[in-house]
Length: 373
Ligand code: UDP
Image (cartoon, rainbow, N blue to C red; front, side, top):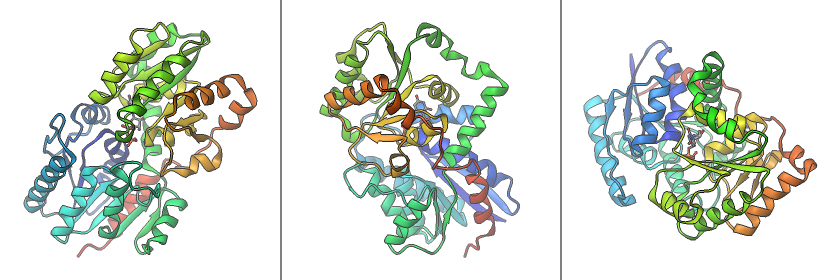
């Protein structure tokens, strides 16, 4: 039996890895252990609960307001100790978080082979997204299996002379989305918490907003808040805004937005409710990575509040658009989609450049077949 240690710490990693864990558990010849670092405790636990995933190990490393240095040091030490105790044959990390970077590094220090899920995304700018662009790049030379979601991602790896062990699999977020949509179809009660909002905003076009990027903290976040306030002045529009719990987001939104009849500022949604929100909305306004991948599956235009993206596939397909964090630009891009039916229709094509829902199956097959030293 080969022992596989799957390491993750945040909401997006959990969403994108629970289908992989399920597929690995069904693969003969593998013993699977999961270790969460709980870099973002509350949001991670929401996903674990929905996915029915009980981690084997929980480092519970979240500390409010901790610096990146301290977080990275604690992750590296904690994950190293886990690897010494578990002695896995392979470590799997996902994406671009501090957990992924430290997990790969701790495995490298022990000469344990690493597989990287969602490899090869590059914005080309080390400060956008910060520090995720570099976290992701640090994993690349360490990993010997690179699960690139798209050909674009595989090409980015090739430009860095990484060709061996690269597999284009699709993004596992689409697997998670399909699984969750099927669960909602079977039991709508699991996403019924949005019934009130849907009734309250009936007849209005809902703009779904999420924002949490570190590089938008400060001036960018304030500009985003003012733009949301201006969009909500329109009577035909409503804002559905699950607010990320980071104080850099919450405080600014409290100060600038206050109470507004057409803005529903709510707690972060669990995954089924977020999927329902994507279904209900007219368009998504976001700085999230995952939402850029999910919204096109629902045929919803995405306006990305960033200047660059490591997910160019949506931009190239015309279903996503970079709008930055300038207040006037955000407002005018949203109004354009609200007022220009042709512009809306051009972006609202259901289209999925990010995957077909079978990425985890492909990943598990490669891991099962791979020879570990
Ligand atoms: N998401 C969620 N509830 C919310 C907001 C987002 O479940 O209230 C999900 C969303 O569907 C996506 C993921 O969280 O899959 C994105 O996480 P986030 O934006 O925190 O991180 P990023 O994708 O930018 O790394």
